[in-house]
Length: 502
Image (cartoon, rainbow, N blue to C red; front, top):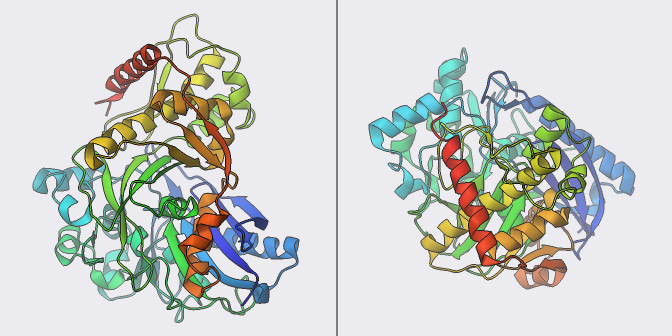
């Protein structure tokens, strides 16, 4: 057994490989961004081959930096941007098309037809999900319908479907002729094709979507004592390491934050923003715009479920300020700029670049900047951008309280944006609850490492992981109720302006 666990973190904007020790400390890592491809307004793609090549590169560079070999690594866990869809040929390993990213809205016609024919909530009882462009099933259908040879080859059993972790695990464990074609329950529950109760593909939904069952991966537990295969000598590790842990990025953050008790919640501020609440072994149906999803499953145990609020645009709004508007040179500068003003100057940004996700589920919404006057300056724009994450999270928390009957006592936070103290203080103020930031904010990668290390016995159990968690700072509310209500009322007005644009 090696002394470390490796986590492959396949994010929306970059790939990372991080090595953790038994205490959950980072020993070394490397990171590389991949291209964001926007062929049309609302369309978002990635190159699957670039993602695999970058994964190889970050693994090799991390091992070089840390002077480690495959013999030092106990096991590998994988976490990934969810819903992003790849179809590839099982013999050649060549993708039929670019990966269609979770943010992409090209499947709106498919989803509108499904919603008109069957109702937007037709599959919710089975899958926990509304019909929406967010999920993988309609994306797979789009590729089958629009890419030459894809459907013909799929009917012949020559096509493999997967989200990004499936694609990378297949390559890691040998690729054509050898690779393990699997997906864990947390990722499978995001396809709109899996039955939450049976944890298996639903044949009726597959027929309605026109997705052949033979192209789908085997659904496995997230934390799996039965390894899915090992890394290969000709791969980036140059040797054999068990691959036995996988979690969608938000579920990985839940595990990394050790939210193992019913009612515990975490919010991750990354490209998007995702709030998950552990509901235990109970499947809690949402009637307030949230989704029901699988949290994680340890082999031999019952699955743990969650309520989730998904926000499409969070950190990517700051990227937009940098890359499209040029009002900041790098992401950390946004806090400094926002601090040049005392408040938002009545400016609100609704970042509905690809529609609104929870709790609205409106693909017809588009981004707006509302409340502009001659008084407004770039400081107000920066502040409004940061505050939009806080307001969107408040929308989710209100829905979660109604659905679960659990009032949030505190919110654990993680992700790259939580180093922004101004934003975290505003989050606490607008929610009126303490916001707790951990010492290790890379909880997504840590959760993937935990999944693999729990499977092999590197960590003996959940109590081991809880001992690793440590608080960095707690932000406590310091806003008057009157101000809180007034600001949130302005946000609701701005939301109204963003709707029915398309």
